[in-house]
Image (tube, rainbow, N blue to C red; front, side, top):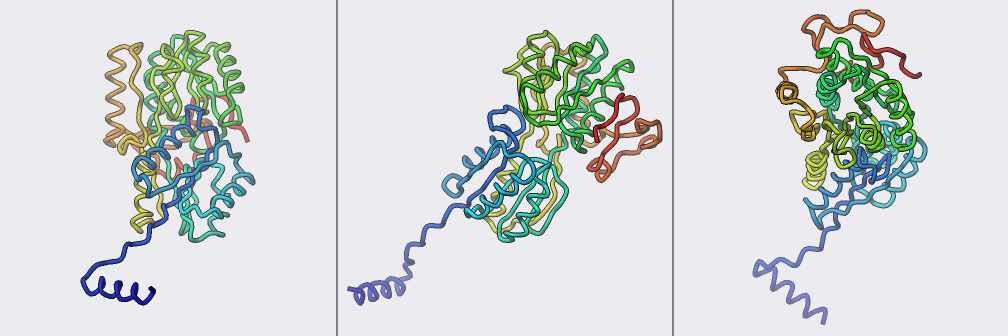
Length: 357
């Protein structure tokens, strides 16, 4: 029988007929999230990107994810397990995963890693992020117009550069349209803790804030704003469902195109380590629809700012700008360089309080 099969195979080759190709294993793509995918904020939006990958590539990919992974040793353990399970490409989606990602990448040189919001790379580690500070310029512009008490509350997570530059960008934009505006910042030392975020929102409202911003991931503050009849902005995703009357707009992180692009690069064999930092121009940072509560003239000026930021005609950090202590930072017309923004560890002039150590 084997002899007959050999003859038939030889005959097929002589006729130019190829034997059926062995089915190729799907590319295994992993995602590690700092919060639950049901946070309706940061981790939720990253998981929407994972689902977009599945829809784009079908049976050619298999995706896996781990949610609510603490930054630090736990992250390194999860990443190691994911690499050992045969995952080909791993997206690590929080700043505190930076060193764990580098450590695990050294042990698995054939696995490709993509780290969100970090700055350390390796031959098998890329970095990527959105220019969320552009969106916060938009929020600040609206908030400066909409506040009646001139007090804006800001719920902040950790004093990393991404969060600090967001506060600065929002403040500068608000101050530009309302010189009397004051920012109150509450640091909650967490990315996702609805109870802490709600407590912070209530504390800021008690201090007179009638507009809330946040750099935390749950819709708790939006819910509080809706209940108290004040305004707020969604974070990382459109949170309008939690505050239909409260939300003025939201910064929406659109990871879908990037994730699809990078998975495609692995499938095509063209993946290389790189750094990507995209904003309104590329659509990685987007704005949710503007609320009807915003007056038409403010809507028009807001759209003008969005368009100018996207075109490069405007920059969120353009001098003259001083540091909080009054020392000069940017001269008239000077724009901040990316390197400075990536390491920003200071408040701009006018913001009260100090950064946590």
